[in-house]
Length: 370
Figure 1 (spheres, rainbow, N blue to C red):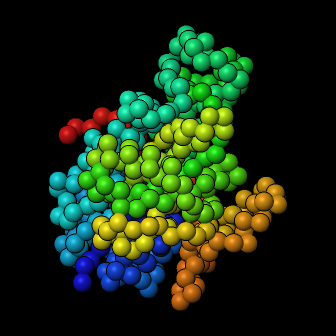
Figure 2: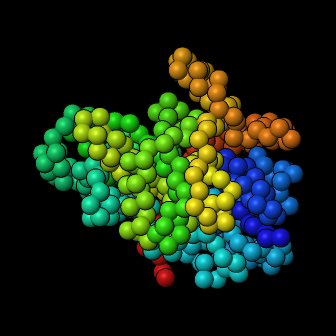
């Protein structure tokens, strides 16, 4: 019986991926560098192992992963969060195959500015973009691409933490900005998220869903898998040109005016779209994703209390909770415990909950010694 080690178990999608692995008859082991993990006591896993931080103790982290591989005779490692970058960097030293691309390819798409340039060079649409270091460069960009509103962000960031929509007047006021930063023209339209599993440039499965990040403070909480053959074909073309293997996800906007798809950023790792994968994809088989709705009910309800809009409340009526399983109901409530622990940690550190949940696993580098 094949043994799988899943890293990044704090990710909400981990419960779905674990069940997908179990459906294939595999034995599943989990690791993370925190004990604040909702599914650590799930009956579907063999063992949960707490490791050191891959960001702050990388060498030790790799040793611990290898020790886990030896001890539990792991056959394959599947990462689900930003520890993917550290596992990619040291994959030549790991004692089991790991489902990540080579580090140079990972970094070529993880940096938002580099990704924009890469996709543009490949012939796909991106917003007009620049990385500006001073007021003169900013003034030149605004002159070249005049508009009323712009998007400002940092090349690295997650959950949209660094993304701001600023008016031209705000950009001309130094109180609103701090150089350097990435600036883009604003594309108004429908925001799509994708998640794909691929092998050697061949897409095995792609799930697509609409983003509701703006309704949920930059973090989507409700996911409804939908068909979009046009966008799916574009994504498969990009994956083919990248010759990508394993997991990759894109954020895309369909422009209201032109109907064109503009690529905004890429996550070369697992995202919420993994919720909709069929187990067969982990056997590297081509398969359609599931078409259903899933959600984080407690977080969605909290967001509704902060923004009590009818359409947000209506969403609570459909879509199974990510942590719900009829034979293991306790996990549904375990998310409250781990959520409260993350909230307390965020309060103690005086940062947002989103920021604290990735602090010890983030990758924010461009240059590595290979």
